[in-house]
Length: 364
Image (cartoon, rainbow, N blue to C red; front, side, top):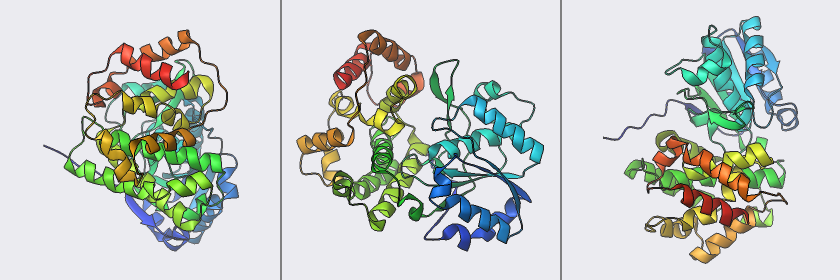
């Protein structure tokens, strides 16, 4: 038996935050906007949300300290501010980090008796309402239940283990128009990794495959613009749609090996999340014993053959010089091998040696 659960209401279009501000009115009397230090101010998303809240007479406070890979310590500070200000709902504005942060903070505020670490240990926790305004096209966090938090003591990134979907998501591709090319590519690769890992997944079914295939066809229309840096408004819109479909997909299937393997590169080497996933992809796909679905990927993406597909992956996942020793690779491989959730989603049996080989051949 298959299930499909997607409770997030998605509102899309130019200036949608302002035009649909009334959708926020039912969520409470006071909001806390959770964002990073700079990008939401530069792209206008923070200004739009402030104006939207003001138009409908909702008071708000801003927490703008979310880093690129949000840490547990930062989430706890945000939750303390939210409790002090007695806010009713949260608005995550930015890339995946502020959106993930809003989910974790929402759980802490709904369950004030819990410490930050206890969130990872408890099950079926609830949250105050969350609103998501994505300003990148990659994570799909606005339509997933996941929140990945950096745990410095454990030297890793970890999903918080709860099922919290945003109540509302506002999609306006204009917020992505001025993204740097490197960020655009890295987040696009993240979206592709969601689509591929949801497709090549033990939990895949006819419905999830339909979403994956549609998402890849849309994403494939953006390949040439990504490679040539010709990214107009239509391309930005397609990338956002593909990202959202990838989020809807992994909300049903979960991610798989590349996500588990990429975390080590992000935490230990500072490789951006999407790029950390993507650099693994050629060898990850070569590792499949059953090539039936793998061989369909170029066709779905509108790429002429598999060799050209690997070439595209290579051109989009160039990593600036980093040094990774064999000892580090073995350590990373052991960490992934012990991550039973990611291994469980992969449709074939995976050994420690398989993981080591993917890392080694990807990073050499």
